[in-house]
Length: 440
Image 1: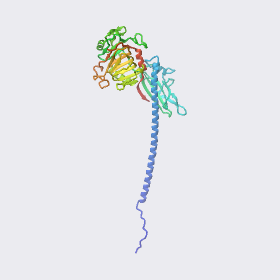
Image 2: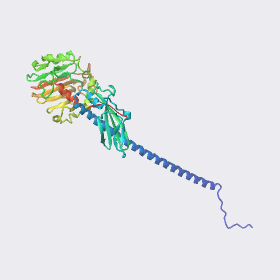
Image 3: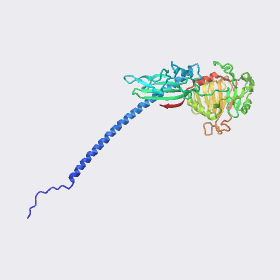
Image 4: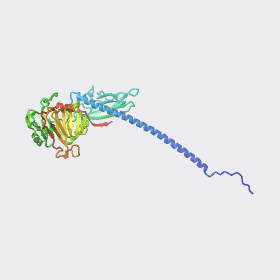
């Protein structure tokens, strides 16, 4: 009889030792993979942080450059206002050219210079050109701005033919970030007002009133105290477009001797000016574009629900844009654009340009001794619905204009005087409009 062993033998399952080795290798592989992924994510995170920091630095330099551009735009306006030739930017271009009389700015070579601590000490790459806005600090960075002519005239041309020039501004940070911006800017493109009162459209509505004490003057600045007249300059008292408008406007000349221009009186001061008037005034889409520009440049935007209160403090450089109807609460000055009905009291005065373009109604209310010095344009471009700012603007037949009205039935002794000096002061003092802008 075979005796059984009291000890049991251990049996290892076939292949168990190989499986344990494989699991260990798999664990090591996963650990290495996770470690690698962690390293990659760490480097990616650091790269993202660096890219984000670089983006922030670039944006800061861009905003500094943009601030330099805006500062230069205002400086250009101030320089033009103080120049002997306010009707172009020739003097400003000549001043920018520096001692050698040539514009040397090379945008591709424009760079910042730094001291040992990384602070910007100045800029190079513009020859001897005189910066429009010199080296200045702003928001932790530094900027400068330079003037050249616009591409149409030629960037190095010192003769400005279109009232447009280019401003180039550079912004730099302590971290050596650098940005360049450029803008083409334009003097307020307000075409010459061709008459004391210009009424646009196929049938001009004009009512001159029955007062013998009032005065309509087409001789430049006659009776306008404080302004310098142009010798021999005369314009029609009422300028209209088309013979039909001329006939309808003449009906409103009630007291002929109160109208005077170039030795003529009465209906002879009402003229059809369609052959000489700037086409901006007679092209409805151009008027809409001009109104958009004036609104964009306005110092004050008034509405019926939020009326302006700045009238007494306005200057000849003030631009006011009124959406809808308005009754002037007193005397004021500058450029005024009204899209609805403008009502003016006979006791009040206005120096500058009044453009009642939209629904096209200008009423004097009551008598008074005020003066309107400068010029007026009235146009109805509101379309068949009679409301400006809707889809049918400029759709009235035949050319987008409806009947506009200038009514001084209650004008009393109020004087309406053409004055080029007053109109020039309005346009030369206005902010320069940015036509195009780009980041280089």
